[in-house]
Length: 362
Ligand code: F0G
Image 1 (cartoon, helix red, strand yellow):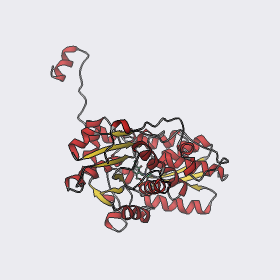
Image 2 (cartoon, helix red, strand yellow):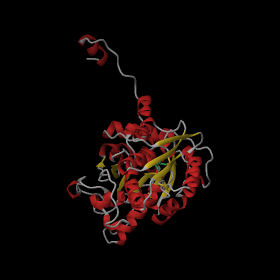
Image 3 (spheres, rainbow, N blue to C red):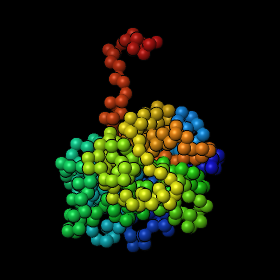
């Protein structure tokens, strides 16, 4: 399915996802809506990138980095925090590789809730840490990985009156499924393939739920194939067993035992899709290509979707012309260190035109 440009509808960001998709969400008139006007993110057609990595595909990227806190987590967090307030909760808690924490911290601030975030020490990008801190969350660095932090959060939230806001909280999935609605609202039908990074596996679960619900409501006539990508050093679903010491440059998806493992497998199998591996090198190449060819800056984990499409295209997986949507889950500014490391050094000049012309080769 290839859309003509004139068929693509614009999404105004005048409301958040709860108001926009109220009829599809477990909310009532009594639910206090805690929103930062998340969602309605751009679906950008990237022809220069497609020409380079998969010429028989029409590729769109869903730029989730343009959500209020810079990642897709805001879609689920507006739901989780609104329901927490509705249910009378005073505090929320999550384990996070950074983005969930940033989003939980911001939405908690807006709701006036206490927020506790557990992050794996030394393995979260600086931009994300700065967000949790400025929004006033209690930030706890755990000398362990995400999986270990999540175990602590599960135990603590089952013993104390604190609401868990990881994607094990079903309201998170409910909110995140709105991404699928938006894609269908813009394109008229789902893409043929939906490419997505997989970490804790909540997002692939949510998108698949969203597409299936739109089909049930008669808003679309078919479903996409879900193609998920894990980083090679953190690929438990692909390997078929937990990874005790997950590693990858894409710290957002440095997860060895995903909470929504079974649901991710269901999305893969029901849709006739796949979950595959991309190496750190492939991730960083895709990250750079997107920035250089399309002016789109995402964080490394997000580029796993594009890296995966590139890898599958090179293997001849896409037999016919098709439309692919790649979810770019987080903004590049979350993790500027990686970008600076990959580029060449800036030029240094004294303030003279001669020196300037010389370094620029004019
Ligand atoms: N991309 C980014 C930028 C993420 O932050 C995450 C997850 C994912 C992809 C994977 O999504 O877990 O639903 O499969 N970040 C979580 C966090 C784990 O704590 O911020 P998933």
